[in-house]
Image (cartoon, chains in turn cyan, blue, orange, yellow):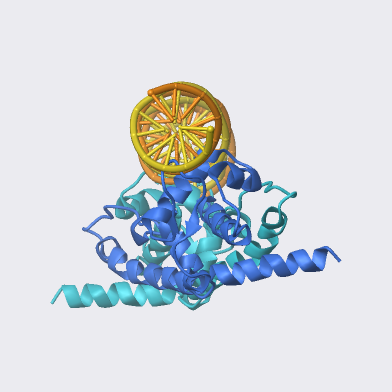
Length: 146
Length: 146
DNA sequence: GTTACATGTAATTAGTTTAGTTACATGTAC
DNA sequence: GTACATGTAACTAAACTAATTACATGTAAC
C-alpha cells in the first residue's frame, strides 16, 4: 500500500499558500484547487500547524507559512502529515521463533538495513524545499502558457 | 501505513532456506520459524518463485534458492513480493483543479521528486544481498552464544 | 492404486487505514 | 447577532493485510 496522499496534498497546500500570497487561502479555496473536501484540507493544515509549518487561527480565514519557503523541506512535510508512523516505513513480522537460529537473529539483522534504506529516502526528501517546488510550478506554468 | 511485512518475511524465508541448506525447507517448517500460517509462507514463496528467486515444485517438500546467494539483493525481494505496486511508493492526489496555476502543474512537479526519493530507497535496498543477511545472522548467533 | 504428505490457491474473516462526508461547536469581524 | 471561518467528532465505503479453512492437485513409497 502506498504512502498516503496526505503528503502530496500537504505539499500542494504549502505551495498554493505561497503562490496565492497576498490573497487569503481558506480551507475552501484550497480544497477547490486540490479538488477535495474542505475538512480534509483542514485536517492536513492542522498537522502542518502542529509541526510549526503554518499559522492558522480559528475563525480567521486563511493559513500562512510560518517559516521561510527555503526552510521547509519535503521531509518536514512528510513528517508533519505522519504518513509514516514512528519511523517505521517497513513492517517487521513479530515474534519469529526464538528456537531457530534465523528466527532469533533476523530482526536484529533486518532492522538496521531497513533503517538505512529509510534514511536514504528521507535524505532525498530533505534535499528539496517548498521554494524549489514553487519555482518549478511557476516555471512549468510559464512554459506551458507559451 | 507501513510497507507490508511480506518483504521482511520474504527475506526471512530466503535466509532460512540457505541456513537450513541440506535439509528440506517445507512451508510448514518455514512457518514455524517465521511464526505464522504455512499458507502465508506458500503465498510469499509463490511470489519469490514468479520472480525467479526460488525453485519449488508441487507435491515435493522444500524450496531452494534459484540463484546464487550473492546475486539476490533486498531490492529483488522487495520487487518480488509486490509490496509497492507499479513503482508507486507515494500516492498522488488525483484530479487537482486545472483552473488553478498550482493545480494544473503540481503533479508534473511532484512526480519526479517522488521518483528520486524512491530511487534512493531502492538503491539502498539494492546494495544489500541475501548473502550479507545470512552472514550477519550467523555472526550474531556466534556472538550471542558466547 | 491407495495412502501419506506436500504445494497451489480460492474464499472468508477481523482489523486497519484512507479519503470523503455530515454535523456542529467554537471563534472572529462587522 | 449575523455571516462566515476554523476545529473536530462521528460515520461511511473502499482497499489492503494477515490469518485461516477448505480443498484441488501433485509426488513418492509401499
